[in-house]
Image 1 (cartoon, rainbow, N blue to C red):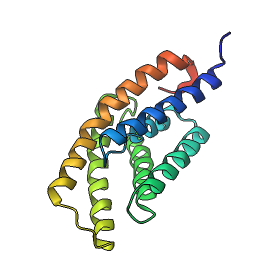
Image 2 (cartoon, helix red, strand yellow):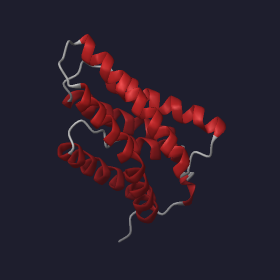
Image 3 (cartoon, helix red, strand yellow):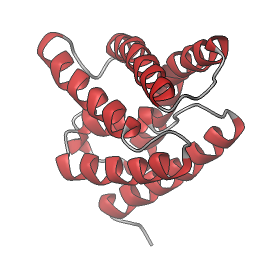
Image 4 (cartoon, rainbow, N blue to C red):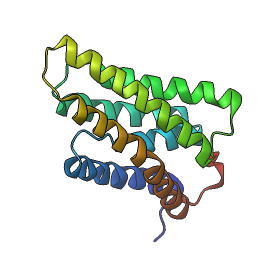
Length: 161
């Protein structure tokens, strides 16, 4: 019995989200959903991106200790930066993902610094810098692995990648 591309896609997203949660448990402070959202932006299926963002937001906002809204700002910035990047770059390549990763690192640091200061939390600056650097370095390989496994597993031509 073979599954249709739509079912294979849903199954792939479910497995990715479970693996991303596992990565986040191993590396606290890291957002492993970001590569999936980049991939969803590249596939140009707005409803898929919307549902995926909603699921990721509910998980991130529900499990974090920062006030509500940081995840919305971060994922909103991701989509905005992706859309602006489409005007200037080929968004399906590694170069664009590297640039986007660097930009998201700056956005993430800014959001975290803002929310930490608003909540008067004590977070060592070195820890914040390390987490941001790991996040920036982790996005491209996770995106590459997600892209390759998704192409292999889902196998449909209309993904826009």
